[in-house]
Image 1 (cartoon, rainbow, N blue to C red):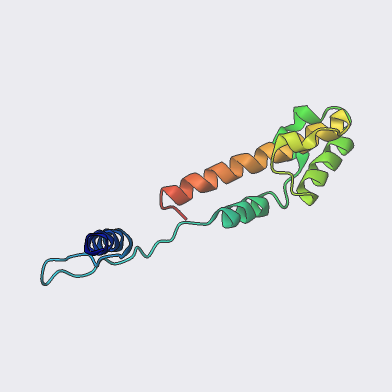
Image 2: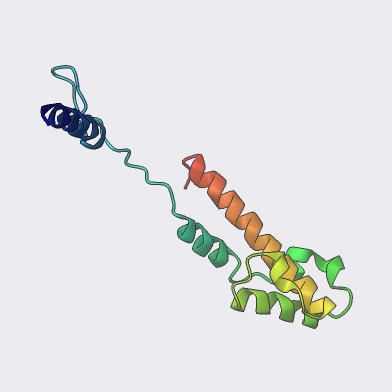
Amino acid sequence: MRRWLLILAFAVLAIGMLVWPTAPVRPSGAQPPVASAKVPKQEDEIEEDAQGELSDATYRRLAGPSACSTDCATRQAGFDWARDNDIENPAGCRGLAPPRAAGCRVYAQALQTAEARLRNQADAGGP
């Protein structure tokens, strides 16, 4: 019986050492670390900023005038549909008629490009 109590005591002690956090040891006179004042942008902030950049964009401006030689209104409608429906990936344009899908894809690709640029700026500590 005594042997089991001793084994149980050591087991509890071992588990306690693994579970209980210990305070970090700092040399005397050392100051605690200061949190960085610069907080990286969260993913949802990046998405909102990218959508904001494209809020007044048009299919013709992003795709270029030569891309709008025929059926420009339908392509713009696809572009607007993607913006209104928060399409973030060109795969979300499947099922649309080809001219609408072209406008939708241009919006989704522009959004992905803007988000990637904003992520890179945030990672580099930019604005």
